[in-house]
Image (cartoon, rainbow, N blue to C red):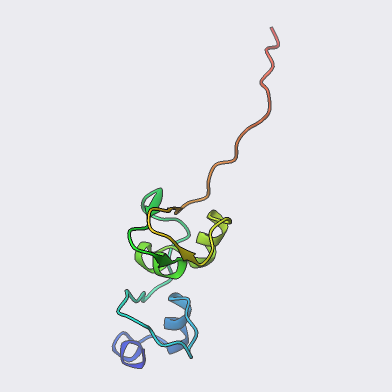
Length: 103
């Protein structure tokens, strides 16, 4: 991380912040590293998990903030099984009001 921060002239703490990892955590495997803040919503509506993944891995793959993924998918745990559909945007509220005809 230090080499990346130096190469791109970024404060090290920002690199950890953008990638939502603790300075004490080492990456277990290769992954994308963001040099700027991730977006709140994805470029697509959802992500289908192909291999068992964590929400953090999906966040990194899709470029969506981990905190937002947790809000959009409150019923998912941090470990997500293959075949699960993970929302990448805020679902629209269901409108339960009944429209009255005033004619």
